Amino acid sequence: MYIRVKRMKATYFIQCDPIWTVLDVKQKLFTLTEQPVTNQRLVLMSTEEVLEDLKSLTEQKVENDAAVTLTLRKDANEFEKYSIRTQGGVGKALEVCLSLSLLCVNNASLVVTNNCCK
Image (cartoon, rainbow, N blue to C red):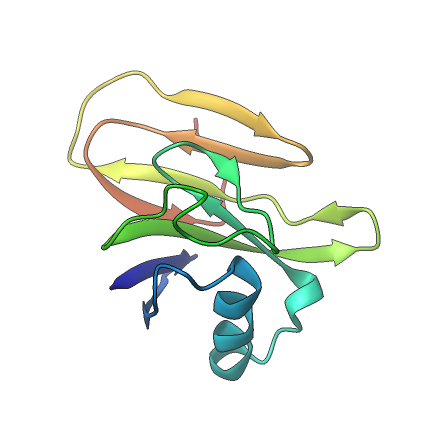
């Protein structure tokens, strides 16, 4: 299987196994981004849930071709803000606060930006 990991304007296609833990995925991302696994947070875009490091992808309902957002730690207590917006769609923006990160969702194809929704 593979998952799409989105961060700002980049998308990483990660080939993985459903029994992999999120930590396994973060280790693979480390080789691509050079960001330590402790500085990474992954959010499953379909459920807006922060993925837990020690649980498998299957346990957290991450399926083939799932879209996941990568956000990075700003300091010891906070992750950077990010938003997920749709292109070409009309609809209401849904703002969801995930701990210290902001996630914004609309109704079409998903794009990760570093700006908050309007």
